[in-house]
Amino acid sequence: MSKTHTNETMAEMEKAWLVGILFNETRQSLYSPAEAKDDVVTHLNELEALLETLEVKSAGRTVAAVKKPSAALLLGSGKTDEIIEQAKEAEADLIVFDENLSPTQQRNWERASGLKVIDRQEVIINIFADRARTKAASLQVQLASCQYHLPRLAGAWQHLSRQRGGSYGTKGEGEKQIELDKRLLLKKIAKLKEELDEVKKQRGTMRKLRSGKKLFTCAIAGYTNAGKSTLLNSLTGSDLDANNRLFDTLDPATRNLRLTGGKEIIITDTVGFIRKLPHQLVEAFKSTLEETLIADLIILLLDASSSEVKNHYDASMDVLKEIGADKNKKLIVFNKVDLCNDDISLSMLRRDFPGSVFISAESGENLMQLEKEIEKAASGDDSGVYLLIPPSKYELIQLIRKTGIIVSEEYTEEGALIEAAVPGYILPQLDQYSIEKPE
Ligand SMILES: Nc1nc2c(ncn2[C@@H]2O[C@H](COP(=O)(O)OP(=O)(O)OP(=O)(O)O)[C@@H](O)[C@H]2O)c(=O)[nH]1
Ligand SMILES: [Mg+2]
Image (cartoon, rainbow, N blue to C red; front, side):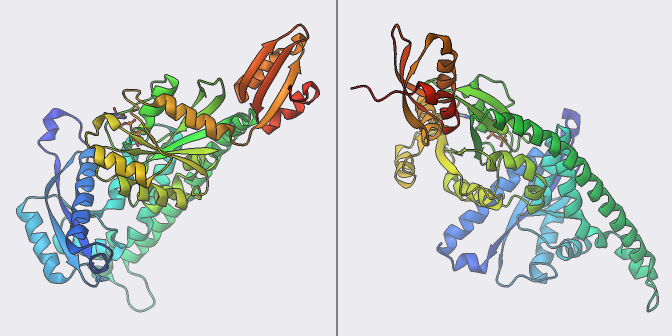
């Protein structure tokens, strides 16, 4: 896919014919047929938005019902011909499936249509490639892309195999070429993995340094475009890029945040999720996604103004499960309430997600409540202490303020009388100043 960025070339933007599949099992699921079709249409709208990100415009779409997926084409041959005809009539340059295509299906479609045929996974990998800015992101995307293309190599040289197919026991030119390409790609994959290991090591050291400080860590996770970067900016006064584009953030960004009660935490913004995030990307981005896995608290941020909010929740939970972060402590936060003028859907969300927080990262609405909830989570395992700290040790009060919460403080001639909740790891430093609970 070409990625043109100038106005003159906008006229030459590639055009895609979109194909959504209505599987028979979807029809028999909990939904009525109409609801199942609505889902396919919504997903196609999302695919259209993803393609726009790559400056590919939609030439039209087909929603095809499939009773039994065919191994060769996914669809039946009649439907296949019909779609190819529609795509050609609309002068589409490529056909894009919202479902995953097997390498064989993709190859057969390309052969039948003479057009480029790709699936949703390849679209997402292309967007990630377009967005990668840092070495780590670029290596991870390249790795995902190579792994996606490895099983698809066979198609590229089949014409040679057919022309020059060797006799029994010998190999045709095409097959030789495929093996050569395969070896090259495998070599590249091995090299990318090596380079990534290096980057990971450096990241690991940074993470260790951070965890050495033992501050509470919080990761903002959620569907792409939910407002994760905007939230980190509003909470910490940073100026990370936050644009109305899908997958704007690929690299994790970490900031320190002092909560209103004084406690200091570490907060991370990271790559967004999407329905059917390609497995190769999840694998390749494991080290980036690990920022979420190691978090003491995951803020699962959702766009309350989207009609798809519940599906976004499900898709986000699926990705969290895939990276093993489904058991982490979570706080569900609904963003963009400033855009919601429908009180009914907000009350339904309140009912379905008790304990969740409703904010606007953009206008700042309810951010104080969010901070309080984070503070609560961060203090969940803290122990209550009563202390008499002599003036010569007043630097300990700073430590308590930074890591825990001071409930009351009173300064006397002997020192400071402090009642506080503090995390276990600073208790040894405070032990000798501990006193009985005052009457
Ligand atoms: N009206 C409104 N817009 C918001 C709010 N929060 C974020 N936005 C907008 O939503 C868009 C996406 O915000 P980002 O912060 O980039 O979203 P993200 O979750 O980081 O997105 P990715 O990095 O692409 O996954 C931007 O145009 C923001 O200005 C909000 O509370 N209200
Ligand atoms: Mg972002």
